[in-house]
Length: 230
Image 1 (tube, rainbow, N blue to C red):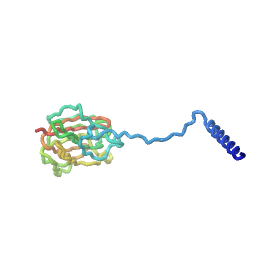
Image 2: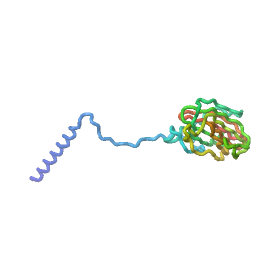
Image 3: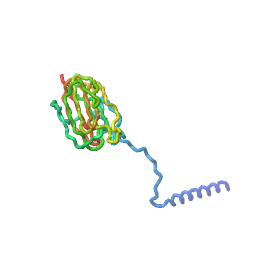
């Protein structure tokens, strides 16, 4: 009987002690919390919002797109293709640092096209000129031969664009020769990056129409090459 009374007394003292401890927390004091892993927005595909599209991406992402995937690029409500050459866009900055170069494919039918994307650091683009090309091509400034696969060719010149900073560091060190074998784009190859002029040659499977436009956040120059018809 004495043992049972002792146990009861201990239980009562325990309840009182817990109650006192709980009431001693100052009003508004933070309560213990369970931490959660931060969420990461992975964004969309590098070259399209269509998950079925084929891509061949480069490498060295720029700072704005270092976490997750680069922003999705438009694949609907685009301007019509234009077959006239040369085509051009005016510069919005004196110097544009190339941060990434990518290529992708968007189908092989009558509405199909292949896409080339240049991503730049900062908000502006260089002066853009797209013209027809005829082999043989040469490297700038060495003058060495530049073989490019294809039966029809486009030359893209970016005046005021470079992957080399004035201090000599590289803002893009990824591939400079893409050979994706897409329905329109066979090869896309750098011909030179000299004195802030970047030149590239696109080897195509046949004569093709094109469109040029700019996307922001991050700044991107997009060149769509239509799949040759017939």
